[in-house]
Image 1 (cartoon, helix red, strand yellow):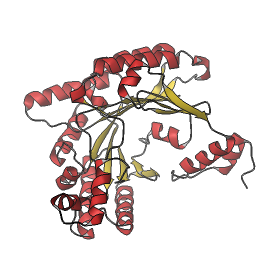
Image 2 (spheres, helix red, strand yellow; image 1 turned 135 degrees about the vertical axis):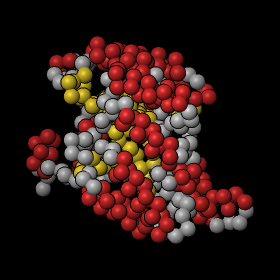
Image 3 (cartoon, one colour; image 1 turned 180 degrees about the horizontal axis):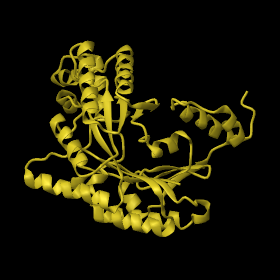
Image 4 (cartoon, helix red, strand yellow; image 1 turned 120 degrees about the horizontal axis):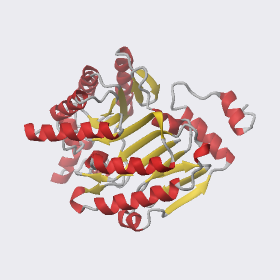
Length: 358
């Protein structure tokens, strides 16, 4: 069984982000964790343990920035879930985090203990939102960490015993004066990631999502008007498709040469460190999703929880849902399956959905 839990809290909203987040300054941690606890009880109470003899195979806490929640709170949530269904002995338990500044020795010691505590309560995989090891790109993305802080944070996680570290990287990020500069900055980011010897790398092209600050700025940039606002927006003029392709191909070449296996369009892992949770999505397996705005797929039914924070805290079971038709299930199996480098096994597809593919 696979489970996703959304933790929406964040210190700031990045310019490109369209996820459901709750800024720290608005609080609400206690109310949210209480609602999440109620949702866990409600959803897991309907699950027959005999249907999942291996227990929970993957448990993923995404966000937002889940590392803003204490290890004690996660210990309580994991204990609550385990009452209904145990974690398998080889369960992959992931927490997302963002690089945190190590301003002094006191801050470093506090952070060391925090991430040691996450290991102690059962987490065994961490996914870090680095995005770039180039400071101009980080600034353009409105990230609140520097390249140097990202490197120090990864090294701190390694020093306390994290043996399965994944980092997110992003290409086709402005600003750049020439396409060659864009390639050089991306190459520097890739080489830094390789030197850090992390186990897993997700490499995504910057995408302009609707109703984000980036969408507004990139639209202004395309108008090429001369006002002060337009001038500021000019740095968000995204590179053309052919540059994006070259950046993507560069990542594939450098990472595979460094020993990473490209197992999915945007994901690379050292042998033995493929993300089991990611594969659950691409193999169209059931994923029980909990938390505000969480998207789940359970026994042929797709559902999404309310994206309204206050509404979720009041009623964590408020959701929209619908059942996939057989054709939709087959189409999704093909669409998601073809993201994997292994592709789709037609014989398995025919057996699972009882149809003649050809």
